[in-house]
Length: 273
Ligand SMILES: [Zn+2]
Ligand SMILES: [Zn+2]
Image 1: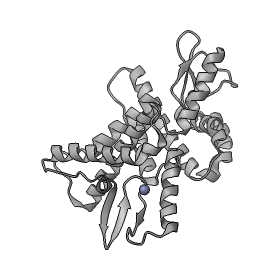
Image 2: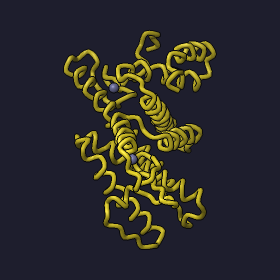
Image 3: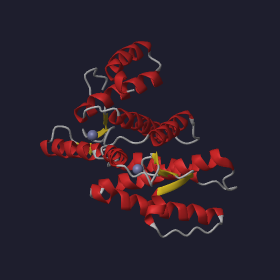
């Protein structure tokens, strides 16, 4: 199975079927219906519908970081918790995108999700938190009249609602809907991915391999989200992913020739990095 022309984004699965490392679909590559189904999965991925294991990885990492048993102390810890909550909210959104939620539901969906997350964390931390105004769930007061949007992270003066500012904000949300996730969220996912790669669980090697594979997908997904926010064309999805998987696999194997080759292939994507 060590054909050099093999598509690195496809892993062998059972009985001739393969698993796509980008969208998670398991399919028979020679079946025409399956090829169509697969293309459809990539469109869904481009719209932000992430495969189950990837979004579960993101959700779990987010919840773990958001929960703090001794309560959250200090501004930095509070900020870290807030980012973790956002990560959880995003993971829920990606699930609903997979189920076909319309884009127009993005803001109300996120408001409800933040309310739910805030409440379940508050319960755990043992202080009541009542908030019925959806807008308050999305908008954080930063002091001095400045507010921050919890969806996109943009800070602005709400009373200076200039048209340009409103457009900029709408543009940020549009970018997220196209897969260009905000910096804080991407960095959180990338870090969680690298931590999982370093982690050596005391379980059977097969399950460890699987966890490492999902961690790699998370890291590469976060990089893709950055490339999207820098304007990479959607058509480049497969080639971009292939180059990044090759680079990560090569680095893990430690094979110098593979690393060299992978690095050359990566040069095409540096401008989005
Ligand atoms: Zn795929
Ligand atoms: Zn926003």
